[in-house]
Image (cartoon, rainbow, N blue to C red; front, side, top):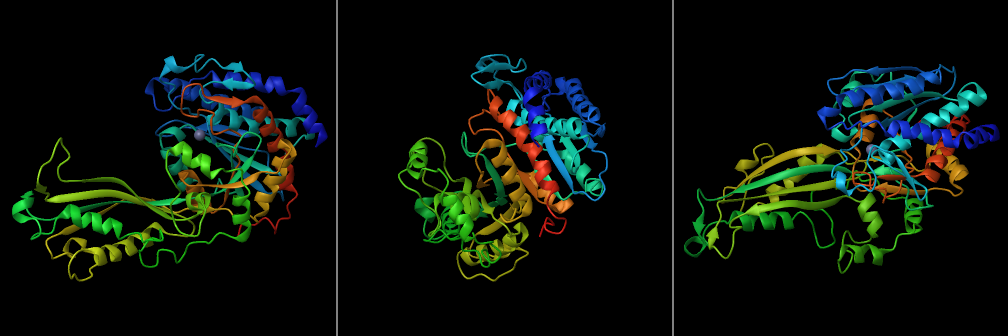
Length: 477
Ligand SMILES: [Zn+2]
């Protein structure tokens, strides 16, 4: 290993020069004017892989090309898939940049450019760690596959298609992704869990027209009143969601997880102050981090009905509606939530109604009809903290960053991680080298050059750590 570290040290400034080259290509996937640049960036990546002895190609798609490469086959060794993206967000507004977005600039130990941290700088760390292995040792200690897409910022449609068609070719033990952040400067992190989602729209219809609330109020069910009551009924005083069976599959936090989260440098008072809220709320018995990362939640995202204009209008609206979602945690299934939600809505619907799970519209003979639209759903994902891959990554990070990583989860979802789980049946290791304030989608995007170099070192060590796992112990459970 020291020989590899030495190589990394003596080539550090060339790595930066090469990253500059990559960052100069304006590979903006959303803008058709950059089609040629997209091809150029994909070819640049494939060329990097070929130079290290990989078989690599750019694969045309309906959208932007995919870059795919494989290291020379090492029999009896494990196989890992490195995923990343070479496309970037549009740089606008240009006038907000201190230096032009596609002219990389070095200031105070950072490189400033569009794509610096998201994701060119991060994906490049894995390429350079491979280069070090190939040059110093003549080969990698594991089999690697690189899958770099050009549509991450516009929905990954071609990648989804490729994954469903080429699952066999992409077979691997685990996916490695560096496209995120550390917990804080100097506090590297492994993100081992993401929440899922089930998103709905509910429409409530009452009388055949808007009515005068003085003449009819109290005699006819008001859809806005009914909607408010229904939504309020989906959650109880303890912050628990009232859908039957909703918590049946929820994977509880382990003692170790709760300890790890409690030990994070998270200041609740600062968190609340920054948001301008008086106190923390949520499911009883859990901390704010636990609620945001590891517990299912319910939130209304849109609400309408009745008069929205200036002043007062005494109306009993004919209809009302809401958009709302449940954030899900492993192992909740969005489909099962939908079934349970329909039962619960039937219970909450005013007046004596009969349960009919298929025809919701007929559930409420008391003058209101319910119409439920399921917008989208995705399950959450969780890599067990005692997975040997997680431990291997933790050792590699500790080696390069000088301290063990903290273990974090994320309240939102990263669809591609769910897709890898579904299509390839494997876990993803989320090893972000960036920082929260790197302005990933904003002007003055940046990436710490120290973190860039540490990321390369951690990556090089990771291949070594992964290669020493015994073949049985590493099988994902
Ligand atoms: Zn990204």
